[in-house]
Length: 519
Image (cartoon, rainbow, N blue to C red):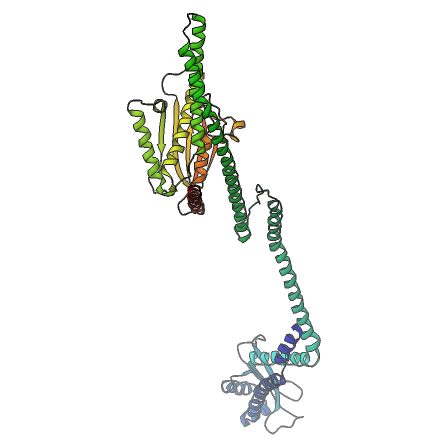
């Protein structure tokens, strides 16, 4: 293709018409030069035929000769010099212009003619020097050289020099362009292929069930977006699997709690009644034995009360309802909870819970903007109350261990903010915090760090948060104590829609189960 293109272009440049036109142009220059020279010769002939000039020259009157020659200068502006010579070459008279000849801009022509009727051998002779502008002669010589070079290239070197040289140059440039394109493609494609290979390698452990794999995301191109989407998908899958696993374990624990509550509740009343009957029927006068019976009655009634409370916790845990989600503004809800807690601590203390909350510095930091979410107000109130009470109990126990039970036990801060597509609610305290080895099992049933705890409160909290499509985790607070961080999805997010769908599906399932039981 390069050879054909160059050959066609060179054939267009070396057409016979071009050479003919160049030759005609050169002929015009030659005719012009010839005409200029011929005109100078005619002027010399006209001067030589002047009778007066011939007469004074033959008479040998030198001054008269010079005067006649000077007169001719005014009639012929192209003259440079005029002189009369005899046959031996002796100058009989001469006249020259004042300005010398400049070879850079002028070209001269010397013309020798016999005067009048004199013969070519005897003389005297007129020697005239003319000057013409050099530009036209220079242009003619340049055009002559160009035409000669053109014809030479056309006849001998076009195929050998022009076609072959430019074809090779074009081929070399084309080859360099291909090489540069290949190198550029390798440089540009290698990082992309490497990142795609890393992404493909990460899919193999995911296919085996490992959802902890993450790819390193670099760049803002399509591959980077794919890597971010891959990591986000794995995070969502990991959270979904953890949620499903937690709900499965919760279902098993609820079944066990229901069974334990039934098995423990049944013998409690007969045991208590039997001990009370023994205490009532004893009519002896032995004070030691009566004291033993009385102590036994008190111990049994206390432990039965503890067991009844435990049975109540088991029953509550076993009958924990699913969240009935509705559109609620989270910011408004938290501000209402702030007022609710404030009202419970400012009036008369009617319960141990209110007395507990009155001994802490509880504050809320909630933004004024709208925070649309899907919530179950009652159940989320239970979550917030449970977490705040846990913080208050931790502060109380820490103060008791330090021997400082007077005054305010510490601070508890409830804050909310929007992060990406979710809301973050933090409950911070400045208490002793949570031990690292306990954090992984803190939300499992029957795990507690409190002396009088059942280990079901935080399990219920996590169950409610999971039903809302959120997550809860325990970390270290900037205040120095514990932080419980609750993440809840925005109302328009996919997590919120999925939570609503699960709630509706659970309601349908419960309705079918109730209908079957009734039948």
